[in-house]
Image 1 (tube, each protein chain N blue to C red):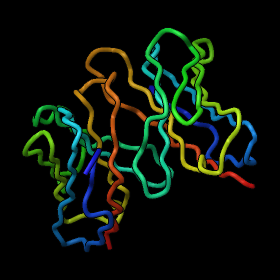
Image 2: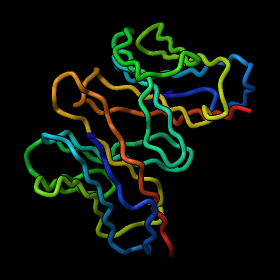
Image 3: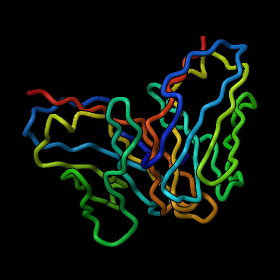
Length: 114
Length: 115
């Protein structure tokens, strides 16, 4: 595997379910990110981890819970989601946290909440 | 409010024609500037970036962008598009004031190529 991988690629869940999205980066980077991409809206930064510590939390509802057990893995735990949470969730990584570092994106998980 | 604007939601060009995608930003100082491309079913890929120096930046896949401070613009160009360039293009900026490192994206421009 190379680059940034995300699983699953597609997920359909009911509002009462609990599920997790997984991201893995094979680039040796220190920073990882979760973004939400909704139709006709700019990408929204949700969370940033640098060296496994959360450095950004963009007023995201508590039904989204991130976890970064090590610098290569990032999870997004989902529970009691709403239909408006349906979107493409993108994971990214960069060498370090900071505006000058290129971010490498995974292919995303297409989430549908029913 | 600080923002990134891509005024064209959708552009259609013929294969072989030239292309220019517009991007304007509103920040107090010159930010770091980026263009990303997203092909269907894929994540975003960096095409090029501008931090300082020469205002004409060359990127991958034959793309270039020009930073114009007076117009707060960073337009993306390609002299001759290929069918494989059909994708969504995002302009993004990072303010250069310390402590605000977030990459802020525009809403994107979808590019369609016709034969």
